[in-house]
Length: 168
Image (cartoon, rainbow, N blue to C red; front, side, top):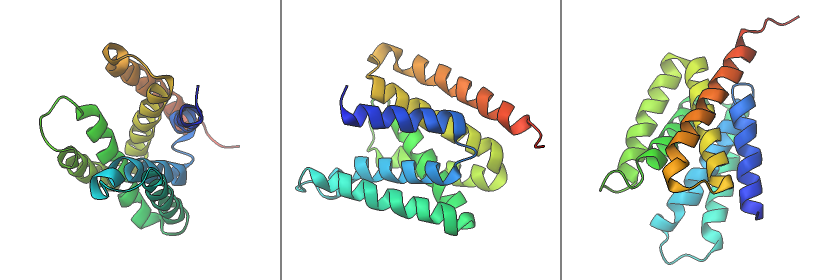
């Protein structure tokens, strides 16, 4: 198992279980993932480190926004996570450029974050965490969708139970 897989697993499990409590982490991870995936499309002749740098920059901006500009970060996080999730889920299923499902998912994610913040946050962090875990484990293609679905449900149940617990 390489370092990238370990990072995906750690971030995925953290988001799956604690995503609602660590909103800034969701925005940071979504920003990193978007930078990592989309950088080669904007810089096709770029060197190997360009996606890493783009991911780190967008991830840091997302984390800072999540901590200091929460209203903006709610929409940004919803847009990035919704776009990333729909882009990955539609990959290979549609014969269209990846940016189209990304923008569509981003708009839906931002709108749902505005309308139903807590439940959308739980759903998006569960989906994003599940996708990262499945990617980190290198799950076979035929089990990919089922694995993401099962892990997402587990994440939603865990976070919903944590949401329901009363403090003190």
